[in-house]
Image (cartoon, rainbow, N blue to C red):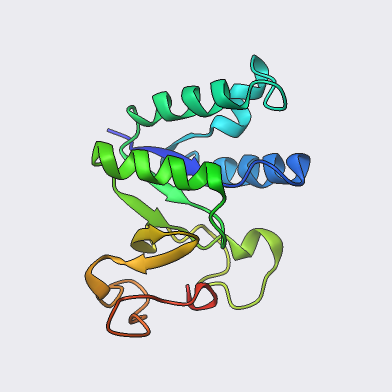
Length: 155
């Protein structure tokens, strides 16, 4: 059975650019996963500018249908932090996904196809922490200190 992945990405700010990035992420993985992207679904019937609380509530309700959450951003917004907290509460595994290849950012873990499930993470504020401070089995990156905190540039 194909896994359903909840795409966690900023919405506010440059809304059009953020929606386009989410659309590209979904298009890149659609053959191997079923991407669940509130950014693309909810604006069809909710005005985020005037109904933000309703948009967040609906997005969190969708989380229950996901097998995994993919955090696809370097910084965690307030809305994303709420989504991540709900995923962890529900027992949905949360992974940090490097999507630098979408923007041409140098230093991405891989160029080409999305590198799925790069790091299982815990999030504190807007910082990513490795689960238990372990070395990533995919890229070999190790946490920067004993607390397991890793600078975002290293992910």
